[in-house]
Length: 185
Image (cartoon, rainbow, N blue to C red):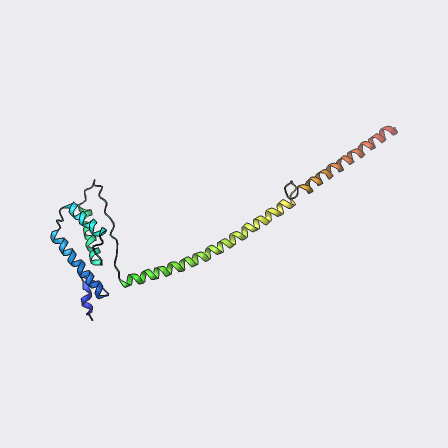
């Protein structure tokens, strides 16, 4: 079994021997690139940076750290009026701690969504109750109102004709009384 010091590469401590070997491999790639790369040539540096990102050359935090240095160098050397756009550095560290964090985050998301769904359900029930109450109130207003509508039009029209008939009878009676008074004199 390897000693814990064997897992330290470039100032980073890796949890497994495999990851430490991958980090040493990244260190060797960085040394090879540094020997051949002219940092004063902006296009060469940007080409190495872009190819390293596209081809997933680096696997560990060592490589990501190196890509960050290249990115900062490109930002520093970039001309002000240049349209050059840097690609972001994708993080690919496969540390167990990160996996635990992802799982914890998934659990938190699930819990959060459960709470949200309960709140949405409560809100939906309350909203449906108030809408049903409004519908009942509208039916009551419609049934008790004097204006004719599809529900009570027959009753309203019958009542209106009854009122007219009653007024007509009262007028006829008033006319007959007047006639009696005129003819009796």
